[in-house]
Image 1 (cartoon, helix red, strand yellow):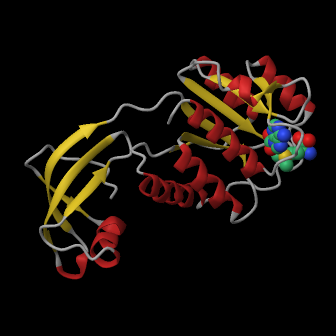
Image 2 (spheres, rainbow, N blue to C red):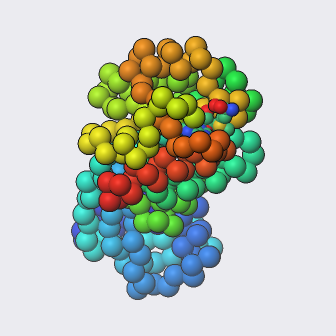
Length: 237
Ligand code: SAM
């Protein structure tokens, strides 16, 4: 279960909101049961359920043990144009399971889909469920929408290696790209119509390198998930 704060061993902690409802109603936990908590920043704790309030709105827990896992390397920042409808869920769910640590919705010249007012909250929920599913202790940070050149400038300044996915013959193959050992990787994936030449030129001028996933043209979410999988699995995470 997700809890933004974790207490020290021996201390009590209250689980509230959706997480409490899920534990009490869907999982039907009882007093004395053991739960595992995570804080989304590498912290995890084993806890015992002491008491459930009426209607299961609050769970009182005692923390038994607590530890912090370091982030897996490289950290993977996916900056991706938005696919339509349900395909956003597929994208975020799979990328989080595989190890995405940060997500930026990309605004591109040929973007058709733009983020809505409720999108970040919805995406966070999808990422949270995916973390629980795959027992990932790092909840991806959801960044504000940005463009490929701007993401590249910021990422390069932070020391991240930026790869722009583009189906071009002169681009570096993904199998070569994943073997460059770095601590932080940023992956740019374009919209259905692809990146424009101007976007590619500006991103490359800002430090991005082009990467290809082969001759087949993949959907946005397929390209994004394939890239995250390639970098994460190659690093053993
Ligand atoms: N007609 C577009 C083009 O040629 O760029 C296809 C766009 S594709 C549906 C959406 C995005 O997925 C692309 O902008 C690119 O970032 C990524 N992508 C899809 N297939 C790819 C491949 N074979 N190699 C690298 N990137 C790919």
